[in-house]
Figure 1 (cartoon, rainbow, N blue to C red):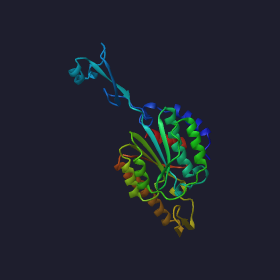
Figure 2 (cartoon, rainbow, N blue to C red):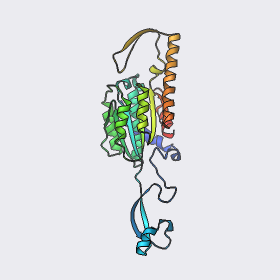
Figure 3 (cartoon, rainbow, N blue to C red):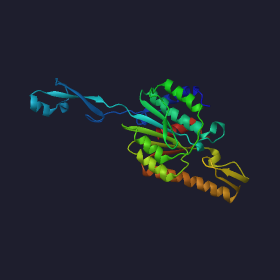
Figure 4 (cartoon, rainbow, N blue to C red):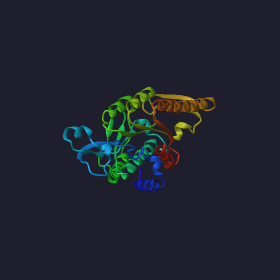
Length: 285
């Protein structure tokens, strides 16, 4: 269970972050030149001392008067959090549960985004997506999300391409997309889904439980699929255990390679690692 006290820990965590390294994540946009990061709002008459680069010379040619273009700051980045809610996320012992660990990562982004007075959207996905926030982007909203996530049981199969492509159609401004998933499924579909979001800043947080990375088992064992009815009985140990470890390493490397090709930040985060260290890894990048 995720405790609301988790937010107080996040607040203490935030105070120790170097804000200069998190400008993208927090949605800060600062203009480097005239008009960059700004949208036109209105005109006003030129006054001595105004920046002459803002004079509209076409309007001067028509009226003989000097007018200054006025601009408004574009709204800050919207942070989109997509949390894998498929059955494979319902794995891990107690505090090592993938869904709970992943939910806390997403909630961390939501909370710190709200604290920066920016907007967040929080959705669960399997073969599509389900937005579960109300659009308030406040601490109270995050508390409500904690209650919802504590009551949720992951189920179904992840279909990355369908879910991400559908979600991409809902984004209408420059955004940061934080995807929290174990990446278990068709990696070609994962790549396709990530490419549909590539116009945005994308972070892929891959969560895996220690029981998946290095199973603490030996001897005659039955392995069961987490999203399918497939079962396989085998002797686990010796060369078979080494083959398994090699396959896990290759799987993570494959995810990382596909992410890098799309300029997506990828972090593999074991659920038995310190949460705030893991969060720092993806927050700072």
